[in-house]
Image (tube, rainbow, N blue to C red; front, side, top):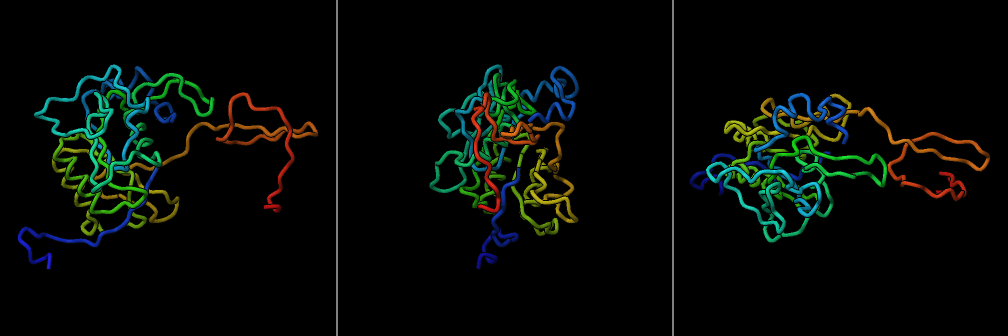
Length: 273
């Protein structure tokens, strides 16, 4: 019996958790050169750890132009197993035994860039909205702790990553994972592990889930967590459909491309599919 072994405190059944997921700084009023974002020097010297499924280290978002070296060893004790570590990406570890795959689905790279993406000029979505992209803290460092593969998010692996991040000395821990239910605070290993991180001065940031807006649809709501909820934004991606009879229909689409073809195509009716 595990409970009879020396050092045993408490055990929980393992579970599988789910993933949670641009223009946000402008929408929040965090414009360049004004407010607390610039007053905080865009996160300079801050180490943000992510518990996720890896990071595409070669992505332009993680260039280290203008980013100083990581803090002294007395503060940062982590290591980097990725081939392209630099002053931006200072930590990369896999807590999955025998796995060395990259970020195959992009969610870890996406959440990392939201937090710490360095300034990237000429960024766009298929040529739409071209400009300079940056994360909330473009001068901060990042450390990735790989805690799942192919959406198989086990509590035991996440807790192992959390413990590793605490030992390494991160300042902030981000978790875009969670359960679809809201357990009692003392019955959830993530809440308990996060409390340990917070007690050591680490800010624990968690996504609130993919559901809602309904009653009891908020997760990761322990009072010692900074729980982040998705919201609407103040823009749209307009797209027009031009019909053969000269009429146009206004709509929205993210699958548009710059300089689209003017060739007309036959309409496809939903009942045919």
